[in-house]
Structures are given as C-alpha cells and as structure tokens.
Amino acid sequence: MMGAKKNICVLGLGYIGLPTAAMFATHGCKVVGVDINKKVVDELDKGRIIIQEPFLDIMVQAAVRSGNLVADTKPQQADAFIIAVPTPITKDKKADLSYVKSATESIVKYLKKGDIVILESTCPAGTVQNIIIPELAKSGLKIGEELFVGHSPERVLPGQIINELVNNDRIIGGLNRESSLKIKELYKIFVNGKIYTTDEITAEMCKLMENTFRDVNIALANELLKICEKSGINAWEVIDLCNKHPRVNIHKPGPGVGGHCLAIDPWFIVEKNCDIAKLIELGRIINDSMPTYVFSRIKDILKEIKDKKKVTILGITYKPNIDDLRESPIVELIELMEESREYDISVYDPYIKEYKYNTEDILAASENSDLVLLAVNHDAFRDLPLNAIAGQMRTRNFFDTRNFYSSIEVEKAGFRYHLLGKL
Ligand code: SAJ
Image (tube, rainbow, N blue to C red; front, side):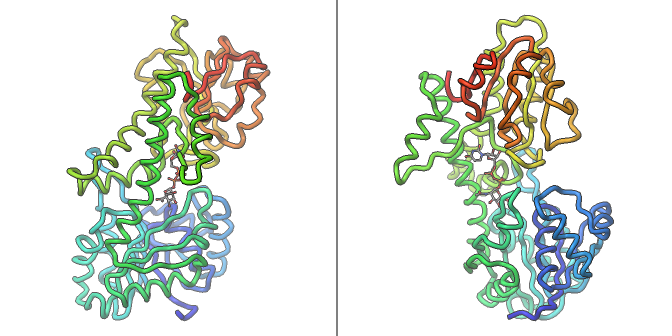
C-alpha cells in the first residue's frame, strides 16, 4: 500500500480535478491543486469553490482546513501528477488538446525518479502515446521504469460526483504493467469500486465508448420519437412497453443531448475513424437535430397566432437538478427562436441565477404567455401551480418535452396539452 502522506499534484480544478483533489486530501494525502485561473485558486485557498455539486463544498472546506489541500497556479514536486484539464472540441469537431499538452509541459521540470503521471481528461485514443509521452520524455527519465504513466478516465455523473468517485468501478490503463499497478495502488486510497487494469489506449477507447453507447442509444430513442409522431403513436408508451422485454432498454428521447461528455466524446472517435464510425456520427447528428425539431413543433402549436408570440421556458440546464448549462440543447433552442424574431421568451429555472431571460418566479414568467414549454424535468417542477399559471396566460398551451406531466392534470387547469413524442 501507498504511504498515507503521498504528495499529489492535480492539474485542473474543474468538475473532475477538484473533487479528485479533495478526495485524496481528505484521505490523508498532501495535495496541491493547480489551475491557470487565479480566481479558482484564490477561492480554493479560502475553502470556497465556484462550481455547484452536492457535498463538494463541504468536502473541499474540510480538505483546505486540514491543511492537506492547497491551491496554486503553478505545479510543485509531487509523487503523483493527475492531469484533469478540459479537452474542448473545435468548430470542426476535433479534440483541442492544447490544455493537455501545456499541463504536461508544465510538470516536466518537477518530475523525479519513481513519480506517477496520470491523464484523467477524456481524449482521443492515442493521446497518452502521442501527446503525453513525447513531453514526459524531455525529463530524461525512463518511461515505464523510472516514470510510471497511464490513463485513468473518470466515470462520475454530474450531480452524484462524490458518491460515484468512491463507489464506481474504475479502469486504469498503464503504459506497462508496472505503471498500471502503481496507479491502481494510488486510486485504492479512496476508491471502493473494483479497479480493472489494461493498457492506456484501451482505457482511452473505453471512456469514449461508454459515453458513445449512451449517445447512440439516446439517438435511437429520438429517432423513434420522430417515427412515432409521424404515425400518431405515443413514443413513450412504445418505450415503456418495449422495456418490459428482459433484454431491451430504450433510452429516453427528449429535446436533445447536452453536457460536456455525450455531446462531445463520440466526435473524438469519429475524428480518428471517419471512414468507419458511421453509426456514431449519425447518432450525434440525430441528437443535435432535436432542438430544431422541438422548434418546429412550437411553430406548429402557435401557428394560429399571427402577432409576436410569447413562450415561457421551464428549465434551461442540460439535464435535471443541476446548474450546468454546458452544451444545453435548450440554450440552442432559445437561439433558434431568437433568430426567427417571432417570439418573446421568458425563462424560469430555479438552478440558474444569471441568464438573459430569467425571471425570479414562474408567475412572472408566464404572464401573457402563449405557451409553457417544459424543457427540463427538474424535480422542483413536479408541483407547478398550474391553475395560477393558466390564469396568467394569453393562450393556454402546455408543451411537455419530457413526458413529465399527465395530460389530465394539465388539461384540468385549462391548458391544451402537447407532448413531444405524440402528435
Ligand atoms: N439524456 C437523454 N436521454 C437519456 C439519458 C440522458 O436525452 O435517456 C440526455 C440528458 O438530458 C443530457 C445528456 O443526455 O442532456 C447527458 O446526460 P447524462 O446524464 O446521460 O450524462 P452526463 O453527461 O451528465 O454524464 C456522462 C456519464 N456517462 C454515462 O453515463 C455513460 C458519466 O458517467 C460520465 O462520467 C460523464 O458523462 C463524463 O464525464 O464523461
């Protein structure tokens, strides 16, 4: 086992790096969290964080107070370096590995014999070999013998990061067996799930494929939704009944796929395999088509109204019960509506404080509105004051994109109920 006072340097204090740093620190390691954003570093030094995630604030506070977690804008000597920086996507759907490269460059001068370097960021298969190794080789250390290197992708679900970081099974892909075993020992400090070891390129492909599996399955559900609407069938009922089969698990259709993972990672496979990865690419295209599809339904629902129409959008985050707007399909839908210039838009989302159309409460948002669009199924929307909302509206349309409300309930309040997935 590793000694309890391992020194760890975590590069990138975002949704993955910060919880990982805090986790090691609360398990007795000495951790330096590094971020190029000075605001993140200054806040962390005071025990504060700038992202929202259940229990993360408490954990970070405890880690900082114990003295085991400190922040800096520059790396320091350590026994293990964990790279958890962003890997954005370029306009032409290619991985931008510049942060991975510069983070790796930044640690080279601190490396010493026996150190471990782990890439956690999601990257195209081959990144450890092609980007990380050439940089690390500049240290003069023998890779695999004096410096142990690998990829250990995170698998945590935003909203449940702390629990999943500890309890999910984990894959570790080392450059050689020695690297895998050293990295495994490190994560065993806090991981309760099983740890499987493999080589680094297999681990890279696993990470991409896990999110691709989900994305392609959601695309299938979204395609089914369009087919059902064309044929007057209720897609939600079809899915519900199909899923009674012991080997069928159709995912949920909806207004699109957002977040920094599913909407991006499949492109990292397509980028390197465009001649083969046809299904994966098509899945992305189908999911990306959903905001436009939802917009066409909105236009249809409101086609009788000739002057400017007002639409009240409930929820704009990329999924329920989080405050994250990254790649949100609802934000994209709003942009489409803005472009057409035919709509006044109001938004109510209890998770988002600053957004251009946001209103403080739902009644203000629905004043003189022609359509309530239930875009995100936040738990907080479970008991909407439907009667009071209906009383505020100019035209009483309710469009449920998540099959969240029963038509009977909504119609009782005087609305016309429209469901995405049934025409
Ligand atoms: N969505 C659907 N239908 C579904 C499920 C999800 O439309 O049936 C949509 C959501 O509304 C959302 C998007 O997909 O817009 C992504 O949400 P998600 O909950 O599926 O996943 P993320 O992006 O929050 O987290 C994923 C997770 N991956 C898998 O479940 C395979 C998580 O475990 C990963 O760690 C994370 O990506 C990541 O960081 O890669």
